[in-house]
Length: 200
Image 1 (cartoon, rainbow, N blue to C red):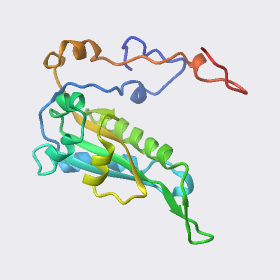
Image 2: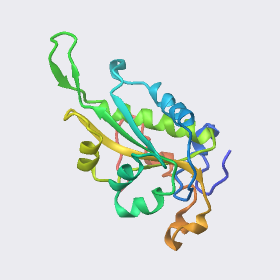
Image 3: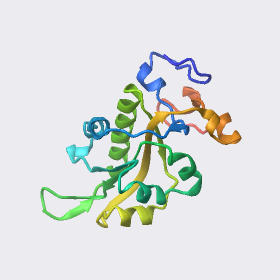
Image 4: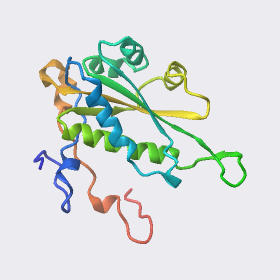
């Protein structure tokens, strides 16, 4: 179990959950397709409303023809460290479903929630296999949506930057200071019985 500051759970949280964190220092190494697909397969087993499975995972590996294109949609800050990673996976979900009763399209209100569940399983699977994953929201969604050739009824949510953790000394001084597992709010500030309570 991790002993990082701020990572003391209130109960018996699984080590696989506590040990997952989001570094930015990566070794510029390749990842084989079998390993990457193994991580994505874990995401496939996430729960979803009515088992619709609205998530889609679009990936590129370093030293392949799509790599620079996937990097180009990241904001400069994220690109500066992600370019050393081994893979980038964009996660999207379909925003509508076809009603089984009417055959007509209708909104799917849980699509983002379901895609988030799939993303977490990918991250935990990769972490347990010795790979680091950093989920990011800092990218141009319109460019990514167009570049990935998604239909209009899909929304791109996040990108997972995957690689072998590298030496934090390669990062800027500001990022070196942040290159450690982060803590979390106390459980009492986010979990309430019966009704919401403001902490502000």
